[in-house]
Image (spheres, rainbow, N blue to C red):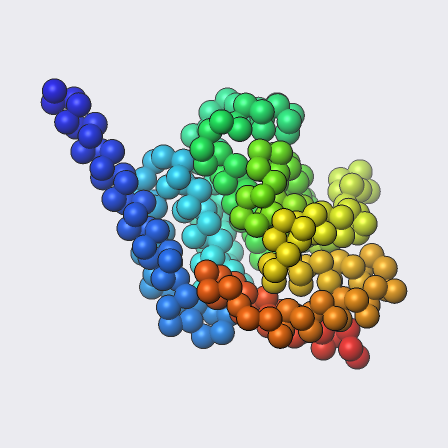
Length: 267
């Protein structure tokens, strides 16, 4: 009876921690200035999720680190610190998944499909590695093997659930193909055409996702300069469209990115 009572208390404590993290996560846009958020709520979410050891707490912690690095950090040095911590948390989350993370992407996806939270762990670890790569420089990231890791984890997430986070796995793969330097025998697989294909696939899942649209517009022009007029129209539509209340900071930042890219394309 004592063991059962202890386990019940531990379970309720875990539920309370996740709920606390979720409450602060929902308030992450409070007090934001444009696409820049305050640290208060995301730091509280990180603290709450970090106290858990289940997969839900782990993947939500990874997601919160990404938000802090992308929308709270003011300097590149701050981003490096945050994403370095996120990488460590990602390693722990993957270790919690156990030996089933070994094998081909399909084998891992098949083994993990019935495990709640597994797809999210792979997705957000891939995202954080991508942000880490941007903070440290693309060529440095290639030397660290970041591109291959991102590709593997995003592919696993897509095989498990392609609709996750509004088509995020395909969005990550598309951005990866577009931004990865083509280094012979290392990242020769990177393709502007594949970038457009994956981002188009992501946009089919979530047609109003501003982040995807901006990424796709940039990739389209990189792949084929003849698509410039279409890309310009897409960016203007992004700027004119209202932001989803659930993603105020993220979509405001994407709108700012759209304005900057549009200015560049209209020169």
